[in-house]
Amino acid sequence: MAKSTEWGSRIGFILASAGSAIGLGAIWKFPFWAGANGGGNFIIPYIIFTFTIGVALLMAEASVGRAGRGSAVQAMKKMGGPFFAIAGFIGVISSFIILSYYSVVGGWCVSYLIGSLTNSVLSSDAETLKEGFAVLVSDPVKNVFWHFCFLTLTCGVVALGVEKGIERIAKFLMPLLFILMVVILIRSLTFPGAMKGVEFLFAIHPETMSASTILNALGFTFFSLSLGCGTIVTYGCYVKETTDIPSSSGWIAFLALLGSILSGLMILPAVFAFGLDPNAGPGLVFVTLPIVFDYFPGGAFFAVLFYICLLTAALTSSISMLEVVIAYLGNEWNVRRPRGCFACWIALFLFGCVSALSFGPWSDVKVFGKTLFDALDFLSSNILLPMGGLFIALLTGWIAWPKFKEQLNYVKNRGTAYTTFIHAMVAIIAPIVVLLVIYQGCFA
Image (cartoon, rainbow, N blue to C red; front, side):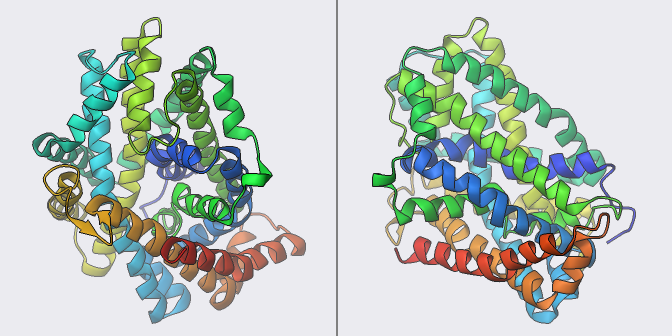
C-alpha cells in the first residue's frame, strides 16, 4: 500500500470511521432493534458494551491496520502470521456479503429521496405509508433499479480514493446529518404522547430483562461499530503516525453511540405518539419519519434534506465496506482502484439482486426458515462478524500484544493500569463475549 495513501487529518479518520459505524446501523436498525428488545433493557447494556469491549476492539483493529500497513488480509498476516491472513479474508468476505444486501436498503434511501423531491412520500396515514413501503420492496424491477443506483454511487465515491472521495464526503455531510437529526427529534418530542417513547427507550425493567436481550445488545455493539468485518483495520492502515489511536477510538465509539441515541429519540417518540408498533421491523424508519415530516412547517423541505443525509449515512457505511474489498484486491492481486471498483460493481450488483428479489418473486425461497435477505444478514451479523472480532481479540490479546501495546502508547504514554485493562478486555473478556454472541445467534 502506497505510503502517500493516508487520511488528510485526524478528524477525517474519526468522521469516516464513525460514518462507517453510524450509517444505517444507527438510523435504520437501532430503532427497531430497541423496539424489539424492550427499549431500556437493550440500550443500557449497549452503552456499557460500547465503552468497554467496543472501544477496546476499535483500538485493536485500528492498531492492526496502522502496524500492518495493508489490507485486512495483509495487515493481520504481518501481525500474526499466515493463519491470521485467513481471518483477514473472512473480514473481506463479510464486507462483500453485507454490502450486497445493504445496497438494497441503501436503494430504499435513494427511492425515498426521489419521493421527497416530488412530495410523494409524506402522509399522516400510517397504513398508506406501510402499504407504499411494501409495494416498493416487493416490486422486483423497482427494488433492483434502486439497488443499482445506490451501488453505483458507492463505487463512484470509492473510485475517487481515500482523501478525495471517502474523507471529503464524511467531513462535510456527517455533521449535517447530526444537525438534522437533532432538529427532527425536537419536533418528534413535541407530539402528544411522545414522552411514552422516551420512557420506553430509557426505562429499565429488571423483571423482564433476559439473557437474550443482553446478548442482542452485545451483537449490536459489533454491528454498530463495524467490528469484525475488516473496515477499521483497513481504515487504520491509512492513519498517520501522529494520530492517537486510543482517543480517536473513543471519539468513534461516542459518535456511533450518539447516532443511535439520536435515532431512537427521533423515531420512537413518534412511534408511540401515532400508535405504531415499535417492533415493526426494518420498515419502521420508512413509515414513521414521513408522518413526522408531514406535521413539520416546511416538512417537504426538511424531508429532502433528511433523506439526502440518510443516503449519506448509508454511503459512509457502504464505502467503508467496499474499501475493505478494494484494498484487498489492490494489495493481494495488484488490481488498480478504478478496475477493482468496476469489478466489484458488477459482482455486487448481481449478488445483491438475490436480496432485492427476496422481498418479491423469491419471497417463498427459504434457507433454514429465513428469506434470502434475512439469511445473509444472519450469516454476517451472527457468525462472520463475531468470528472476525474473535480473531482480532486473539491476535492483539495473545499473539501480538507487544505490538498492540506499542500502538496504544505511540503518541501518548497511557500507563500500566490503562494498558492492563485494555489487555484484559481483548485477551479475556472479548473472546468470552464473542463466543456467547455466536452461541446466542446460532443455537439459542
